[in-house]
Length: 140
Image 1 (cartoon, rainbow, N blue to C red):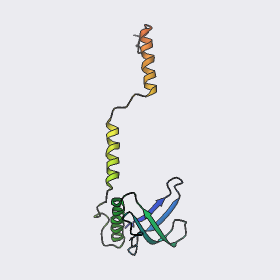
Image 2 (cartoon, one colour):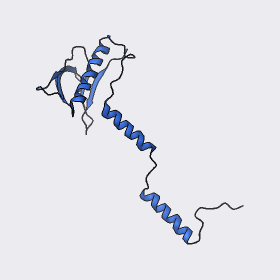
Image 3 (cartoon, rainbow, N blue to C red):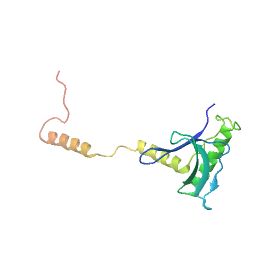
Image 4 (cartoon, rainbow, N blue to C red):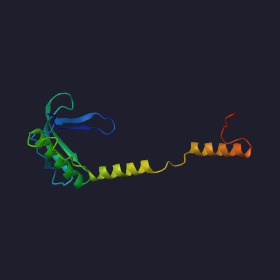
């Protein structure tokens, strides 16, 4: 049975900065009383060497921070064998779901004119005005 890990990369370099098993002993505590950040300690392998690290993670909203905690709690239960991974219901971020919906809507929208499309249309019009056929015809 698989185990759940927390893997985080730096945004620009994509360098791994956190890579650890979400152990049942991981406890999130509020960072300086903030409802948007957590502090926790874990046995990390980000630098390809196992060592105990303390992490502080801050979110843009208290809702995101709460969902992160829910995910960590669920991962701890799965990794401890209390919950079967197939029975664990994924926790979906509303912002992520909304972004996916917008992406789906974009796919359904007709493509907008591009500069190349407009140039092709202008060329076809120019050929029609010169008396040339807009599209090639087959000779029989």
